[in-house]
Length: 354
Ligand SMILES: [Mg+2]
Image 1: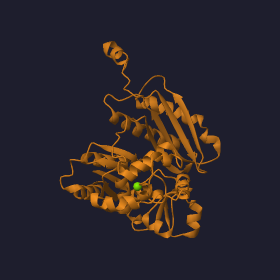
Image 2: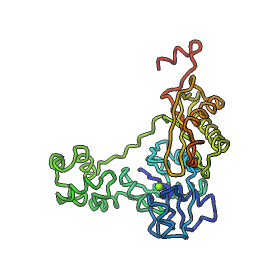
Image 3: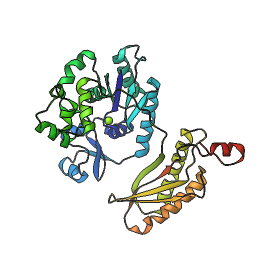
Image 4: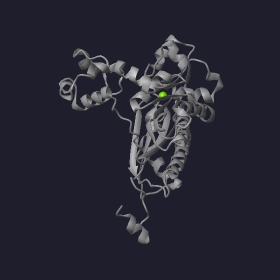
């Protein structure tokens, strides 16, 4: 069986966890536009992507907090540590949702495991996580959607047999408005409408890949395979700050980000993969972002070296003379695919071929 675990209103829930004054209140995490509304704000009709000005005008009672990427990254790391305690077969969907294959591990029944996962997320990470369970990834994801907020839904074989034929085609993830329009025009609305069609029939309406996917859903042979993520290709750290042009403030925040990024790179692999380039970005109070990238003198994870290089890239952005206020600063360390071994002695020459 597959579980789909998905944190509810993730950014907003992290803010409500960390600040009791926000709990139970309509609030949004926003910078110019709403990144994530709390469930209380959703009840008013507020959704992600709404301009913040519009929200403030229509709902003056709504509380607004800034985006704190470091808090979300930390919460995400805790959630994934928790997921991997239940099974090593974890496929991330985003920073706050994942598929877990718990086949053979669900001794207390899959429902027991789903409830245990939700309870552990609440107790250990302090966040509401909805959990759906199903035989395939599609079933698990539809189940977690139904479970929101803060619930558990299990689609067992009996329920799947009833639900699957009646699924609306526009509910299937991957079926966008254009595809749905074509299906709709052809008189196809729910999964059972596909039952008597061949691949050739469907290929006249949608792409070959979509035709195969739809037929696999109709036949119940859709994807149930967990794909493990490859090695991380980069590590980023950023922090928002009240709009400023003060050099000492911006540099201090960037240096703190360097420290966090270095610690994260060091925790990924042993020996750590060493970056040989870096990127620094600055976001201004009008939402515009400027990015500068450059090479290091050689592969290094020395915080002093990285602080120096990051400081030079920061200067190249010209933020001090720009006129706008800096509201976020951060950096990205791109990582080589395999560990970079210093080329000293036999070990180095052996490693170079891999
Ligand atoms: Mg979510």
